[in-house]
Structure formats: structure tokens, C-alpha cells
Amino acid sequence: MLELLAPTTGLRDAWLRARDDWGPGVHEDGFGIGPDDDVDAPEGFAAWVARLNDQALPLEDDRVHATCRWIVEDGEVLGGIALRHELAARLGHIGYGIRPSARGRGIATWALGAMLDEARALGLPRVLLICRADNSASAKTIERNGGVLESSDRVLRYWIEL
Image 1: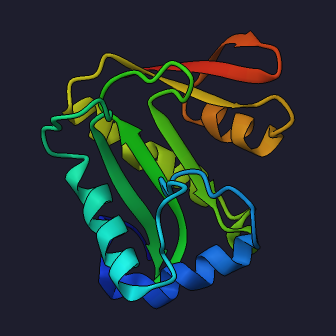
Image 2 (image 1 turned 90 degrees about the vertical axis):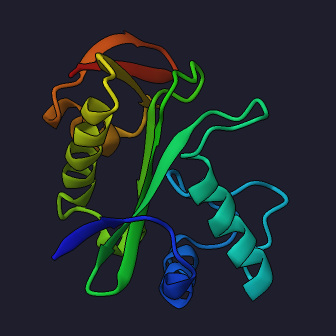
């Protein structure tokens, strides 16, 4: 059964397997890994998980509030999804990614639908999602959840009314 779970150190081994599935140097949308995050070391992983979970609390710096969730099935991390509480124009409100071995099963469509419920609970009237123009799978995921294309160039910008 699919679940959206807050990041936790208890899923470290499962998360590392998901990361390895992407391969070295490949960006994992939805996980929020920064260039200074050392997720291989247990202490670094714990610090990264704490930072992800702290983003949902009031922030004192210029970071955007965000709700980060891991997409989990039977103890395996299949991907990540993040809802930014304020609009980040370059990134949109929601970013997500599904590990390569789990793609093609509708997991992203399900996760985006679940995260839209969280956006509604926050009182957001609509959300912006952005994907690369050559990412037809992501475009279909957004469209299945009611996304209306606003503009296209190298990236596609979709709005979903809540």
C-alpha cells in the first residue's frame, strides 16, 4: 500500500537504495538534497532529514516553507514529493520524482493527488507545477490531476485550481 511519510532516519537504508536506483549525479526531484548535504554518513543523513522536516515550521531565513514527503510502499522508498507553502516561481509549488524502477505504475499521479489535498488544507487556492518540456510522463501526471497549461518553452508551466 502506498503511503506519503515524513522523512525519517528509520528509512535510511531504503532511501539509499532509492538514491542508488537513480544513479550517480542524477537529480532526484522531490528529495530536496542540497550540494552540502552528506546523506551517505549517518550523521549527515540525520541532519538532512531534520532540515527537511524543519521546513514545515516557521523559518527565520529566506527558505520557503515546505512539506516534504517520501513515497513509500512496503518499507521501500519509491520517490519524494515536496509542497512549497509559498510560490517559488522558478520551481513551482510542488516537485516530485519517482525512482526509475518504480515508474510507469501511476505512483506520481497518486502522490500528486495526495499532495494536492495537503495544499487544499493549507488554504492554497491554486498551485503551479513546472516540468521540462521533454518530460512527457510528468506532463501527463500533472494533466491527470487537473493541470492547465499556462505556457511552454523549455519548461511547461501548469496551474491546478484547488
